[in-house]
Structures are given as C-alpha cells and as structure tokens.
Image (cartoon, rainbow, N blue to C red):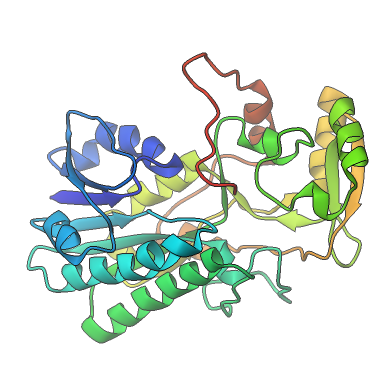
Length: 324
C-alpha cells in the first residue's frame, strides 16, 4: 500500500506522521507527500514537489498510490483559494478516479461548511444538515470540496469519505484562543471592544465569556489534534468509511461559561462577558462513533489542562500558519 498525503507539514500532518509510522496496522505501507511551499525532511517519506493546481504534478504524485489523505488548505487567501480548494481537489480526484491502483480517498473537511457559529441550526448538526458557508473564500472552498467529493462518488463510484472537523487544537492553542494579548483565531476582540478595553483585559490576564445571539453562553465546536489523528487512522483502509461523511468533534461543544468557571476556579483569572451575534451549535459525532468505533478522548477539562500546562522549549516556537 502507498499513501499520498497533502498538507503533511501542517498541524494535523505533523501529528499524523509519527502516529502513522508507529501503528502496526500500517507496517509495510510506503508514504509519499505532495509539498509546495514547505517541505518535510524525513528519511521514510518520498517527496513530490509542486502545486496542487498543476495537473501533471498531481498525476505524478498519484502514480502507484493506493490511498490519498488530502489535508492541504489555505485560509482567507483569495489568490490561492481556487488553486488549492478547487483545482487542487479536482486534479486529485481526476487522477484518483483514472488510476488502476487507487483504493481510498480521504478528505479532511471543516465545520465552516456548515457555518460553525455564523448560522443557526434548530437541532444538532448532522451529516445530513444543510451546508451553509459563512462569508469568505475559505468556507466556500470547504463546501465546494465536500460537494465535489460527493459528486465523484455518485458519478464514478470511487471509495471516498470526508472527516469534517471543527477548530483543531494542539499544545497551547486553546490558551491563545482565550487570550486578549496574543489572540489565536476569532472572533477578533476589536469587533466588540475598544483598544483600551482590550489592553486592560490583557493586562489583567482576563478570559472571555462569549454570549450568543440569544444571550446564552456561546457553545462552539472544537477537537484536539490527537483525536482527529485517531479518526484518520481508523478511517484508513476501513470499509465502513466507504462513501461516508463523518462529523468528528468533541462529544459536546465547548461552553464558554464552563470554560470561565473552570479557569476562574483553577487559575483565579478574571472573566469578561462579551455579547456577540453568533449562534451556539452542536456538531453531532454519533455517526463516526457508531460506524468507525471512534471516541474522542480530550474533553473540555483535559483541553484546558493541556493548554495551561504546556511549556514551550526554545526549539518549539509558536507558529501560526493561518489565523484560525
């Protein structure tokens, strides 16, 4: 078996690689990475260098490949969105469907395809809920990816599935999600607070308690990268994944009131309430738990513990490849 990975130098890819190599299930598999701007240096990985938008590069990368794990993505970069998010997956799927060796195609999607906190849903978001992208090119391309994958299954009967993940956390990410000083992701505090208020909260070491459009504590979906990696490993070569879309997130969404209560009790931090126009949603992971036998292991308590206990070494700088 030969696995082609795109996006191997990113957050998920760098966590996936050691787990894949250590897993006896995949002993004897070979690994190839399609890299463009950043290249991984690893003795066991064959590298193909080039852009996903180039048909010839992609076909060369698929040569002899049995399984594809497509994780490459760009955020709010309109000049790259079509190349990566549209042409990229089209080229991969075209090469995959015409290959005699190809067996399984896995796409890592995102809950931006269902609008995460931007659109209201009357019930938990399942795999049959309507897709509702929020403004911006990134969410649009994630919807296009899901739909294109779905249509290739219908048109050509390929073995393909999508793991739809919410906001992916590792190391001390979650601590920076709640920071007024060095914020990671959004919503940007400047949308709700003055510069003076942000500076005051940063100096106090405060954390936000976001409230949704109804005034209730906001509930937003997250997943720890280790749980996403475990879902990928369970999906690779698994017949139960054939043709399926799976939501893979924490069992319950993160409740900002619970976050505030835990951190106030454990670290004595002050809490700042912030009203927002956003919506509390629940990404239902029942299907992945039932068909894949997958269980997320990092809950809110552990997410907080890991983020606040993480200490960076000098050779482990905080790098944010894209803002969220």
